[in-house]
Length: 123
Image 1: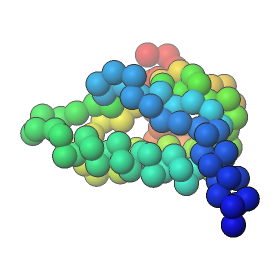
Image 2 (image 1 turned 180 degrees about the vertical axis):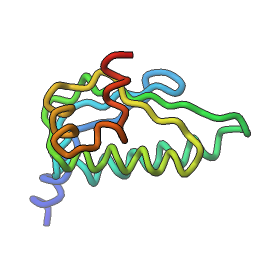
Image 3 (image 1 turned 135 degrees about the vertical axis):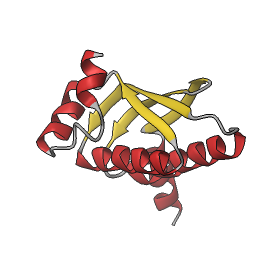
Image 4 (image 1 turned 90 degrees about the vertical axis):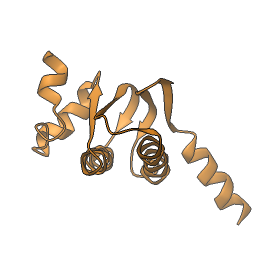
C-alpha cells in the first residue's frame, strides 16, 4: 500500500498545471496516461475556481504548453476534455506554444481544429 502511494505521488510530480498570472497557466512535465488523472483533477479545480470567481463577462484562459516534455494521445484527450468543460462554462480556453510531438499527435488524431492548433502556431 505504501509503495503504491509513493508511486502515485511520484507520477503526479511528473506533470503540473500552475497559474503564472491571472488567466494564464503553464503545463509542465509529461502529458501521458499516468499523469492524466492528476492533471484532470487540477484542471477541474481550475475551471471550478474560474466559475465561482467570475462575473458575467466572458473569460479567456490560456495554457502554455512549452513545458510539456513527453506526450501521448491520453494528453490530447485531456486537452479536448478541458476545452469541452471550458466551453460549457462560456470560457474561451486556448493553448499556446505547442510542442511539435503533441501537435503531431493531434494532427494524426484529426483534432487540431478542435484544439485550434493552426491558429495558435501561426497567430
